[in-house]
Length: 121
Image (cartoon, rainbow, N blue to C red; front, side, top):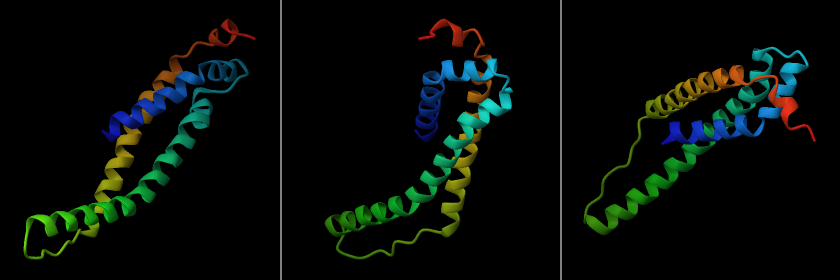
């Protein structure tokens, strides 16, 4: 689900900025420079979101688990998450975004320079 969400958001950013990307290419920016303008800020937001969301999700999941235990069981179970799980989730999120970034980089490279001239207002 994370892959699909990140892909759709990145795709939306690129599609809404096709004219700007094309104009940047006309002005002499290389493909790497244009990608840096659109992919790097998105990467920073993804990393920040991952770092912020893990503690929040952990707190929510422990709360849900405790409520479930109170309703379904008369005993008590210790809730413990191995810290390596957070590292693995973070690395999977980064790898996933890297794959999406490569796909979007290819899309940026395919945007023609003539696109900027089509819709001049």
